[in-house]
Image (cartoon, rainbow, N blue to C red; front, side, top):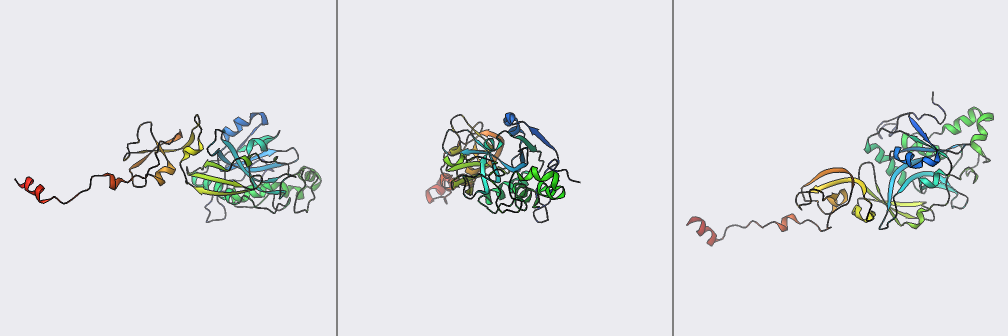
Length: 315
């Protein structure tokens, strides 16, 4: 038996099967004033929820996103089916700063032990669905969205228990919204205020599989996004005193060793023909000079010995 809102069923199957990515049933609650502790407990590509007293609002935590070429701090990014009365459309799948979504709610962090590759698929699919519309309180709400991506099962226990015990549960879910409406009221959609992400044209996110995802934002409030994989050096997303948690490499060919490292994106772009070795996972700055390593042209060419050279050898 599933508990309403309390435990998530772990369904870690392949995408080729009915289920895909899941997480354990354990969770931990944090009061809103301990949001930093809640963030430290989160795993990119897993679920979080916010207790709105009348309902739980669900979202997927994507990880820390770094604004491009600014000194701004990284943004704890969530993807969720939400909106507010001022947005157009009123509800859609969107990206937001988790700290703005919390408001005064208790934050529930669902523990996740899935492999990075599985959580990576959750992050990528979440980003691919940004901008989707069609919110329906009963058949397509925030919980449907999260469970559909993580468990590959579009289901909402909040909706289920509303109909199982309508006299008890209905007030908790509706908060004044019409039960059959295709769009809920602004009260039930007030999961977040107008997004602050609009001031950033691009965000850099290291996904669970250590690829750099460049998220280009468009629309009025993070309602539309395009994603490129490893398109540039991670250095463009770091300030003078900031470093991204990432996969770091040594390049033996270019002599970038010791404390000097290159990022994974530069391994693909600038060091394709080099002898690179994964050095560490952790915070760091890329030291790549962004010049294509022409190993073959830099090495001394091997020529057939000339006649004079042959005479020297034979003498």
